[in-house]
Image (cartoon, rainbow, N blue to C red):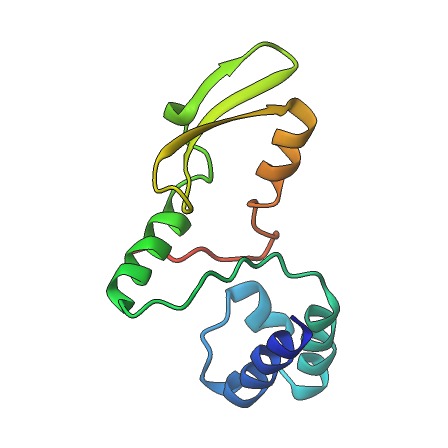
Length: 127
């Protein structure tokens, strides 16, 4: 994972002048002296990334990413049951390619849900 992070951060360093930064960053990171600590900090942070097997269909991957970035990680229609202590929800298993149900304690459900909330200055892609 560190090697992958290194490659991403290196690419960002190389292409920085071509990037369209969020306004908050563009106003505060105006020089290489400000940029380097910023990139170093993000290199050291934990990145929550799940890399699946490579696909031959780029369009399918783009469609998946578009859906994932636009919608919440768990929609209300997938929530089956909540009794105050446990949550049951449906999901599509990539192993079986079927809808399955998962029971989680409230703490575990919230922990998993929180991992999908973007950082404060993160910008989602919209059409």
